[in-house]
Picture: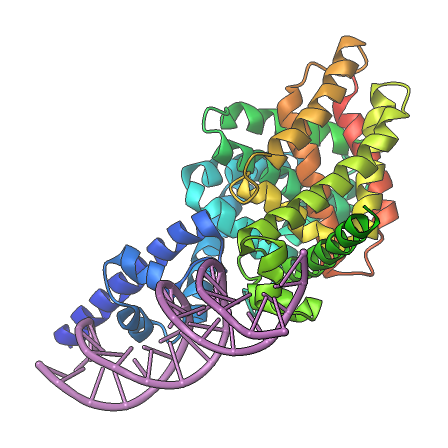
Length: 197
Length: 197
DNA sequence: GTCTATATTTCGATAGAC
DNA sequence: GTCTATCGAAATATAGAC
């Protein structure tokens, strides 16, 4: 038993290590540009060693995508759930998303690819749909409470998500870009665009 | 002379044909996933034939990126220049951009990649920077005229560009999505977010 | 000037040593 | 159970036929 747990533990550590390296490479070259050899080299092991822990290259990519999305959803939902009303949720969402992406710059490009590929690369979970639906329901909440205009919540949710990506992508390209200030600016703008009256 | 012009003409036609096929493939698999063989097959010629007209695969990709960006800029700037004031320019920009992308769906993914790669794949022209600067100067114009709030025009320009991409990407994934209605919704939202008072 | 045939490298995956 | 050695396919690029 003790032996089993030790093996499982190191196995998980290896998988985690491989996934981390893969995310790093994907953030530089994109998923199609990330070769198995590159992953193996980055992890300091051989190609076949990678393919032992995962059955194919696609499985590695899949695991990396899942890890990135999970981290994003976890970081964001935690903040959103603590908000009292629709406006607070939107503000919390924008703030949490940008903070998370700022703390995990290698995740940004991967997230954008997941959304761009529209589930083709992440079979089962259509990341894009998941994301806009979460924001759309926040907007619907605000509409029901009479705080927001009668907007198309799907369109606005997609726009907010895209705006986030656009701003964060610029920060990736230019690290001197003030991400905190941008988050504040975005929060204000979105509320102005949504508010009733 | 006549012979020279004829040769140049067919040469240009070939290049154009190759570029068109490349854009189609890139829109499906992304730039790293688009192989020289696939391009050649799509164009109905051999790999080496492609490499005669362009010196390397990267040059083909580069030409495709340039073509897509040029078409985008041309379509948009034409509409924007006809607008009388800052608000009209913003509205025209959003409308023209979404109409253009709607008419050229294969360009969408390529444009997003250009921006995501931040010039790494398109040496010389940093597409992302070009794009936000154009919108930012429209916003600055509105600020000077006292029509817009004192926003950070760079942040807002990036957000607007990102919002466009997000909405259009959804339309690609779901063709039943009403792009015209979304454009109207976006125009309204952006003006609300920018307007002074 | 245009493209076929070929060379070289790198890819993802398997079989089998330890 | 873990990884080295190796395979066949597909990648890009070149050399030379027409």
